[in-house]
Image 1 (cartoon, each protein chain N blue to C red):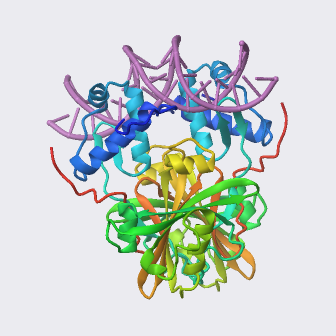
Image 2 (image 1 turned 120 degrees about the vertical axis):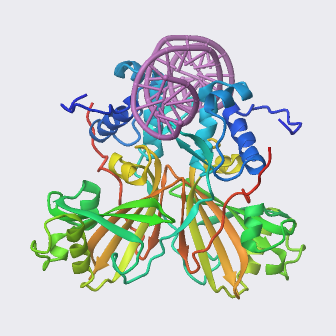
Image 3 (image 1 turned 45 degrees about the vertical axis):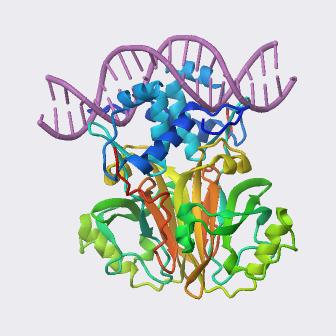
Length: 254
Length: 254
DNA sequence: TAGTGGTCTAGACCACCAT
DNA sequence: TGGTGGTCTAGACCACTAT
């Protein structure tokens, strides 16, 4: 529309809508403010609700909106910077590492994890669940897989299950020397259990951080952490203070 | 289905579909094989095409499928591990760093970048575009922002624009001492120009890697690199060899 | 109970690719 | 030109939240 472009290839409506809405968010809305409901918005822009939703989905993916069923659509605050820099030679579970142990089970690891651990597919491993919170909201859920062989002195007496068991496993890990870590980040969608932990619907986009803990050239443990992609920015490097939000976003108008 | 669960909360159809299709991909399809078209698939599963597409979109987001307009839907190969580990104290553009300079322009940086650079919003910066390829396919597009003040000896004589200009800017950068880098990863959607570079449609999900190059405590340059989220896994750490694909995915049948 | 976003349908037309 | 995925419509009903 607006521009005098001949548009040999017309822009999809939802893409144009996304741009218009994005600009409106910058100029006319404050963080936390609720938008009109989807039916009204669609009518206002003269498009079907499905088309409007396509635009909203994009904006939500980019962390600019937050939608909650039964409540409404609100303007999201800038993404939270979450430090995931590798403190080489440090195990998880050390004092104040922002993670909270939740539970611990013992079962065979998923195939992909077993491959990373270099264990047999059916070997049982300790599986510690932890969650990470910042500013009062859950930002990540993790499963930490620890083969029994990595923590030979772990006794069942400590605790058979639950948070106490999780802490016991972490405690045993810290007795090992840690040579280094490999890490990878990729896009995924939240499994049902992670989604519950993160207060999202299943399938929500997440950043999956996979860490392999190396001791004496072998994998001593593997962690798979899923971060909310809508609200998080993973930071590495020295000063974890990268600010990269789109626009100031503190405007207000009508 | 399968389980005898009473399902107090019925699973959405598209979610169930995604699971079923995902399992079929593991057991019945080889990498590169084309699936039946969307209309046939929808009919086969007794759902509307839109519902089927919702499932396909999820699988594509997870890197399991690849869809191309006019061609069809094929089974994607496992994600490529792309090394983005920080070689502290090393500028971009050193010999064989996998990036190919494409172009160079001089213009004011976007607001978010100007903030990172700690420059005035309207200050002109050199903007170098580079692309990164692995195994013959483009995996990332980058914009590298370099304030004129960081490369004072850059002369217009070298080249006014184009790849030669880009190389000249990189060459000048390498004359500076580099103290360190800050890095952040977040989810984004491809702008039109990046999408073209990456052979994707605008809005495609990308992993945005923002790097701030620090010299003497100040930002000497900022790079914003967008990686195809569907095909890439970003690897950090010592051995860039993390394998985390879901399942073997080399089956074949039917 | 009223209002929100989430799911689903059964169509239609368009843009792109191969032939 | 025929077949593919991409966009869009105008409905309907469901699940959830707040009151």
